[in-house]
Length: 352
Ligand code: ADP
Ligand code: MG
Image (cartoon, helix red, strand yellow):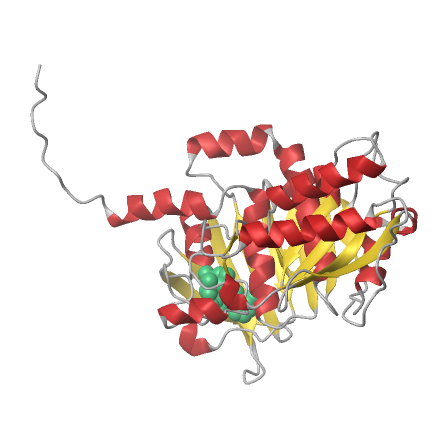
């Protein structure tokens, strides 16, 4: 039986905002990832993450970056407002983590957002609060060093299903967050990371504390520990004229008993990304040298910005390479050499 034709009408702005926000901010770790990336984009050398009840009650990212200038306060949390991209072709030469101007506006839609910030030109800091559509509600003067603190309370309180899942899986979410923070702490050179969690009244545990070394090796020792570092071998491969990959890889006899996904970190020009095909390839080749274990891998691909696209998913974890097949083939050949019976991992270059 034919269905009666329905009237088409626009979805109210606030509803669209909430629907889209749920795609940018998928869970606790993607919320904190966005804030950490904002701090890195602001040139911070110290980033502190504080969680209350594993982030369920609130979380905060505190940096010593550039701060936000007062003439941006009004538009700071409005959807698609950014200081990082103005032309479409800027996407081809991006060096910042952010560019979509969606994170703060999405966090407003999904929780209660406040910001404290101060630039070098301001004698005091300003405390800003926003409503769920990103409109500035109030500003007042406060004391703070140069930099920015973003606080989000009650994330997902207005997305009932997500909120329930968040509470049910809070420990799992927390584990995912720790792994994500490890990735940034490994790759960001000269940036000190700290993360603490407060549960109950005052039990405060330190989740992560790094010195912000300039070397990947030192960061591995701090983040993953000396024992893990001793099981790794440095590697560096040229995979084409303009692309190289370097990092660390498990020695043939010293992998992990289980397939610990959280022990494989992939970066493209210092941006942590998901690379399931590279992970599969590394696991497969490692098994030719060690059939019982899985490798730890920390790879940073250095490639020209114009050969890849990070604007694939709103959370920017997926990446498209224009010549993925040849890149994977070259990587396969390089790793085969490393894991051949007389192969040895390549020397470290000054890049690390
Ligand atoms: P995007 O990072 O894609 O630009 P966001 O919503 O994450 O979008 O942030 C909006 C803008 O707010 C940024 O472009 C930046 O100018 C400013 N901003 C956000 N967080 C910080 C921070 N921690 N320090 C300085 N500026 C910030
Ligand atoms: Mg951002």
